[in-house]
Length: 63
Image 1: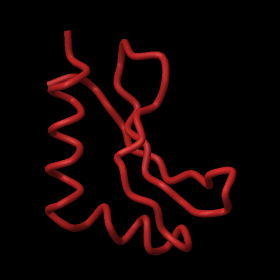
Image 2: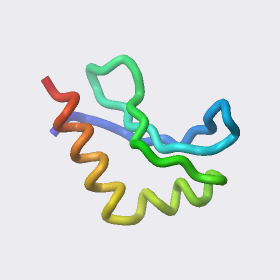
Image 3: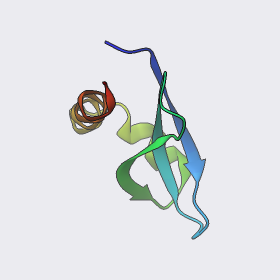
């Protein structure tokens, strides 16, 4: 599995999202969910839905 990290960042529209940073891929990948605040985004990272989203994106962007 590729080295990766996940960050929580604020979007231009004021909402928050989780981004996957994959080694060898220049741009961070938005995991597809937006939240009202950073706490909700960080809490989402503790549920199985986020694990599935991360695994899917890693598979998609691995070469």
